[in-house]
Amino acid sequence: MPAPQCASCHTARAALRRPRSGQALCGACFCAAFEAEVLHTVLAGRLLPPGAVVAVGASGGKDSTVLAHVLRELAPRLGISLHLVAVDEGIGGYRDAALAAVRRQAARWDLPLTVVAYADLFGGWTMDAVARSTAGSGRSRACCTFCGVLRRRALEEGARLVGATHVVTGHNADDMAETVLMNFLRGDAGRLARGGGLGSPGEGGALPRCRPLQLASQKEVVLYAHFRRLDYFSEECVYAPEAFRGHARDLLKMLEAARPSAVLDLVHSAERLALAPAARPPPPGACSRCGALASRALCQACALLDGLNRGRPRLAIGKGRRGLDEEGPPREPQPSRPLTSEPVPDF
Ligand code: SF4
Image (tube, rainbow, N blue to C red):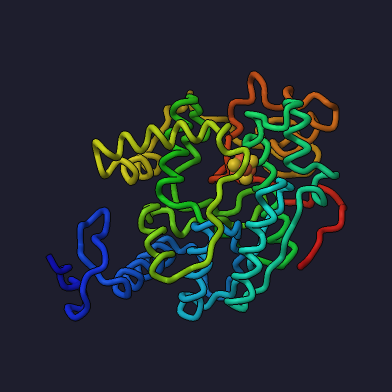
């Protein structure tokens, strides 16, 4: 049976059915609709004002690749300029190839690119060194706990280095739903309370951060990359199989099979969640070492590095530290001042 006509242009044959709406569209109309929806998210949420210098967290993966491409398309209408900022976590056999993809994107799209490395920012610590330190086996369950905190800090540092006024990351609706599930499963009321919305306004001197793809499903992100023929890196990080996030992802897939709206329902539930006063976390103060927002004497990044430098990394992630997350997606606002005076490489 021939494919139906595109429901938008009524001339081309449809190439897909949109996962949520079932609408049959050709590739060109789907991409135009996807871009229009991201534009609406940005404008309705007032995420990126005209004149903003936007640091795009670029990992080389599909989400940040799609985000950079869509924002580049929309930049003239939004009146913003873009700068790719990539973080080299120091993960052998993984990050080098991903960074190569980011460099190809920057060259192809004529966008400036800056790479910041954990080793330079964090006193020589790379994720591979953290893995060896935390487990002795080279593959630790704690890796993503460290990496999520440090990467957030590194992206902030990179964004400041290039003079950005805003930071954007490529988290999609599935990522956000997984984060909500993880926070529920850990009983982390503080993070649930902070997890809603499309980003953080830049509390405590941190740059405003947002997620323009937060309402886009992972399936549509992949479809957009396919129809735009985007070149991205699709291999999984060597530490990912250890992450708790994988369990939340599996659970979400089961939920979505039974209830297709589960992903967006979870994202919106975090936006609408209201905590009883007794369950609300105390207002954060400032880290005594770096000045970033912190609910204790030290912020998460400084506490983790402290534990690593003392050779007691588990102190930083053990009992009483369950507020730490296990992967990159949206966290509480973090640092506002440079962590170290180490030189940061500029590419
Ligand atoms: Fe970092 Fe974990 Fe993501 Fe690997 S999977 S890049 S260790 S957060």
